[in-house]
Amino acid sequence: MNDEKIQQSLKLFIVFSKAYRAVNECVNQHIQQHGLHPTEFAVLELLYHKGEQPLQQIGEKILLASGSITYVVDKLEKKGFLRRAACAKDRRVTYGQVTEAGAKLMEEIFPDHQKMIDEIMSVLSDDEKETAIHLLKKIGLSIQ
Image 1 (cartoon, rainbow, N blue to C red):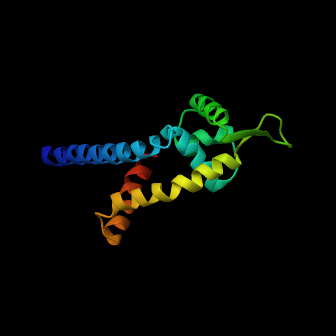
Image 2 (image 1 turned 60 degrees about the vertical axis):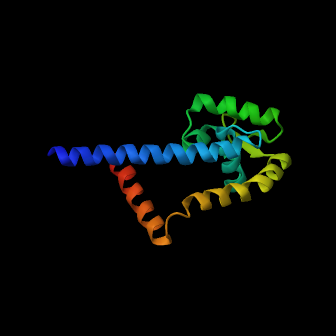
């Protein structure tokens, strides 16, 4: 491989990493203003939009280690935002469900959350967003 090509790949990696960190920090600060840790928000957001989920599958859906899920679910349950429900068909499966209080919280904070993300991404045109989505998927899928 030629050195210029390698340098360009390294530069892309650094720019991508810095952009991700900047966006993530901004979004996480917004979430934390509402008394939630980002992983708590991710679990609540998943359950709010997708409905009850087996606890064993939540981790892979929000990219969190399975050992951490129990801790996050415990915290959300103590706050009254989530409840555990046993599966009627398989006793080994426990579902996470958003409580009424959790749904109310998401109804209050999610509109601002999505508006903030839209504002962050507004530096790109619609076509640039589509191109970025395509290119980032291409990178991610090439690794799998």
